[in-house]
Image 1 (tube, each protein chain N blue to C red):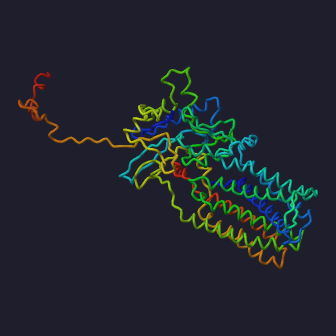
Image 2 (image 1 turned 180 degrees about the vertical axis):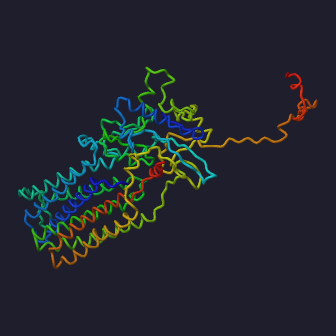
Image 3 (image 1 turned 90 degrees about the vertical axis):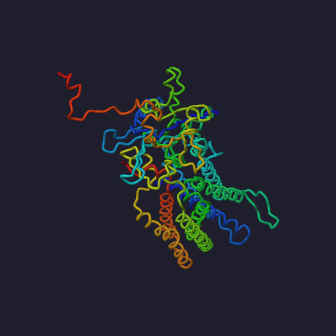
Length: 243
Length: 323
């Protein structure tokens, strides 16, 4: 069974929000109609987004660290939002595990958003139906696109390649390897929702260089010794030849 | 959570309706066995008319909760998994049976079905009453389970939620029945008022128990599990939206903590304590029953507001600072 998902490398994300704008652009132009935007250029702009980048700070200045945290639907393997839907508009696809909303069946009761601990669903205040990340389902299977473009919009937009996309049930896929080998983790594991999207932790890259490593240990002819340098006020060959 | 007035009115109105139906049928059952004088068909029939009015008002209120009410019929399809869908089926079923119960009394359509060994005649109205009673309880369970089944809303995820919906609806309905009986069958008012006192006391115990339980809850999700960083001090610097979003509007009651603290004693007083005092006095001064019902209804509106407002959704962890 396939379970498509995103793996987001928090060590690489710089918080530029390119994934946010790219997601909004693609999904507001789709066949489902625009994603609502209220007062986009006004004082309190608000609207429906499938993906948002949040920023967190750990510690107290000056011993603090900033983390940018993109958040979208995690396409849980056991999604609590699906069984509560009274109309069947919310469903999880068997073939690829994407959690979707059928906008033609949704009655806008918002019950699914109550049942999601992550706040991944946002209602469209104009269309009055619940909306959420589709993993760009209208893009990843579009055979009219070149193969390298058949990825979610956010993944294509990321300038640092912090977002990986693939099948987490295939042990050899890049996402599975990343989760396995780079410490991929799920959000709020305590609820047993088994999110498909995973995050790779921030880590500091450190390298310790010992003093003896700066010199060639195996240097019998002393060829690597520092060359004698003339003092600053002494004339050099450059001075002689500079005229 | 943000209390939606559509849902507050829906749950309180149908709660009173279910309680009133149960009260009327309880009386008819007592009367069947000769424990109380059987009342005229009009008493049960017009009482059921009040049930229907309350249910209809609740149904109308519920539509205001929907973004797309024209598609509401679809909500009956997922009864296998969704308590909301089950409520959508049971509510009209209860309305239908209550309607037939009323018709059977008002138009005297009471064909005999079976005679019990003791000589009591079971007629159509009684059969409808039994089915209606089962549906009334089923509706209480469905309504309450919509909230009680959400496991990460810990304030709701408790059997007390179901028990309290039944007891508060019952209390409201029996007080209304007592008030109705004052004009329709004055000598029966004490029967309803007596039961109303018992149910209201039980409802007060149940609600206080849930308040005590909720005060001791510890959140399961923390900032650490929400973003997966093991650090004792995590501060949000930006939530990814400047002018708010659905997430900031739907999951917070939008009132101050002091307002929340003030509502709690207010609804305990209005919905339980004052009605109990008035019920006690009404045993000699029945005219106060109307006041008891109205005061309690206002109290139950406040109770329901508090019920929603108190529930703290874990998604709020992600939406603390605009940035």
